[in-house]
Image (cartoon, rainbow, N blue to C red; front, side, top):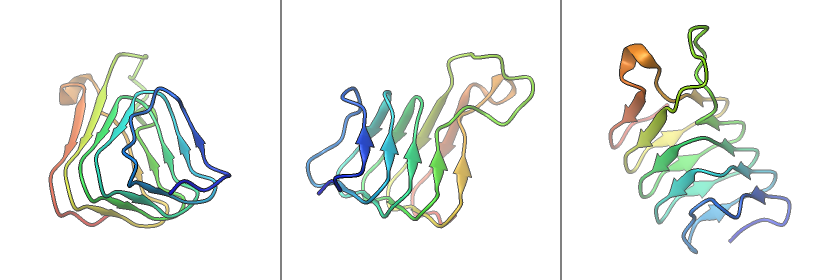
Length: 111
């Protein structure tokens, strides 16, 4: 189910059973596995891979460029496991050089 106000790139990979609420934005490069829910006002961006059954609450910002002054546009990645909950106003960014260009979140986490 995709709300009519959601903006989704045609290059994002989203299974049919993903619930996408009002005013969500999903950019190119995002890949979501089955059973995920974006309640409302969620922004998913960048080279971001999201596992099964994750839930994103309003105003989560996931996958936008790193909050690191040394970041200069390198290709970086965010990988999220399964069964995680991202509550309101959570920001998760991809990795930078010192972290191997990847941020990895395992399963069953609460943010």
